[in-house]
Length: 208
Image: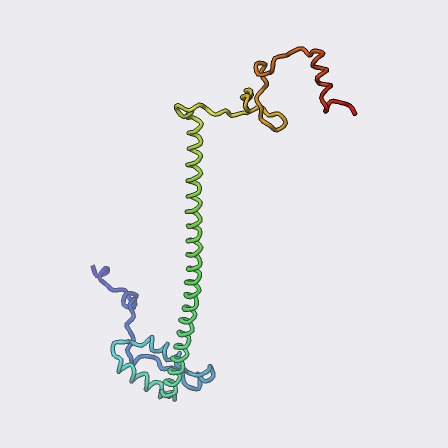
């Protein structure tokens, strides 16, 4: 039983304890950081991320004393933090302005696309109306092929007529005259010698 109840050394070190504020390693000395470019606000931010957040005042005291012990003044860091804040504010404003510009371009393109869609829909409506009218006329024409003539009305001739026109419509040299009938001609009478002599006696028939 004692074999299974004994704690192994690796179990005791599995969950490391959270470091206290007084146990936080101090930042590098000012001379060391000066060689690397200086200890600035970015390094302070990285250090603050590793500190516990349950006792803010104690953490700040320890951080202040640590920084001052390596001759890193807090006013310089605060000034640098203000400058970084202004830079970040400007960066945020620039990105927001870019987003506004893109949104305006998107809205303009969307409006143009919507107008194009509306124009296409209008054209489709007109084409559908024309198509509907064409189909209606086609159906009427097909119905006309199946239907007969109108009741009580003689069908009209489809080609040129070969029947002889009535006598009143016969034209001679551009004039409409009825054909000569034998019954309307005067009766034939033989010419006698007396008729010839009378004709010669007329003054208009004499030869001068």
